[in-house]
Length: 383
Image (cartoon, rainbow, N blue to C red; front, side, top):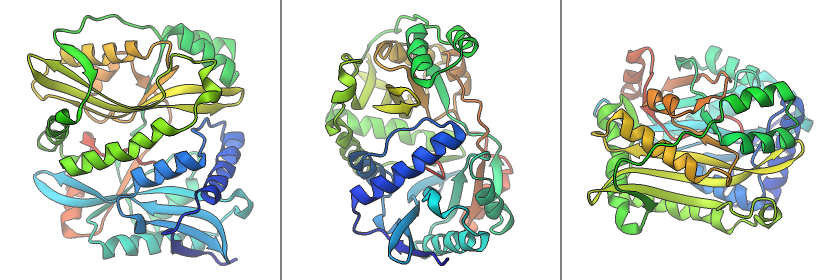
């Protein structure tokens, strides 16, 4: 059966949502995966927040039937004071009715995407891939395209929000008693006074300072995303769509949960010294839905010490206690000690990071051999 790759420039979000939810249901049953339901509204948000260049999202077609998706992000990066263009291969999904996809077909799909990235002068491509779910795809990236592993595990970190959160998780996920007891041992809610100042909602006047905090990592980490005021404003505009999703089905059970998109800053002595951009949405489990907080971007002033950073994190997750059951943090690739001591823990899933340079500038990243610290936007290979 022949597959064809076409740019998804005019998207039918109902059609795309139906495909995504079919894939999610299949993976949930086969791999016991929980997921954020890809409703039409959530798909629209996901597409717009992921693809700065819409022409980098492709539909995979069998004749005229949409049976899959794949795409590439488009991210300005700084590597050791050199500016690069990077792209994560992401949004990969195939209708389960068309499994297994022949290896030659997958190779052709990946090749077409990489060719498009080359046309757009992308220097570096990366893929973050669950080995236990996408074994065949990973094998192709390694053996046929010579992707190089630069980090053996870039899994996200999680924080279970108290015994109450574990009880809800146990009910929704149908977790056994032993696992629930172990989870409660790691779900303690530490109390640390904020060392001065206050954590408050951000205002547009704060945005330039948030950009400064985010861009400071380009000077302290080998590889980090470059932000502009315009790119932050666009990101906020897109994420604000989450405020308009219908959460009414969960409001009765979770009346105090502030679903949607949030930006918080820590201001002390008239200076913003930390910022976080996060969303609270719902995740589907075997036995119902529950609110999750996803911390997408977190930035500290570079002169803060360990105790300041820990206090900020602890105060943030205490604000979400009884409002969400779990926090997922996508940025464990710097300040790992801070996150660990603040009570966040490993998801315990091995998720390697592989990279493929497309230019001489991109090739310099591989001179490091291992990339232990970096700040890239979260973009898993598969939905």
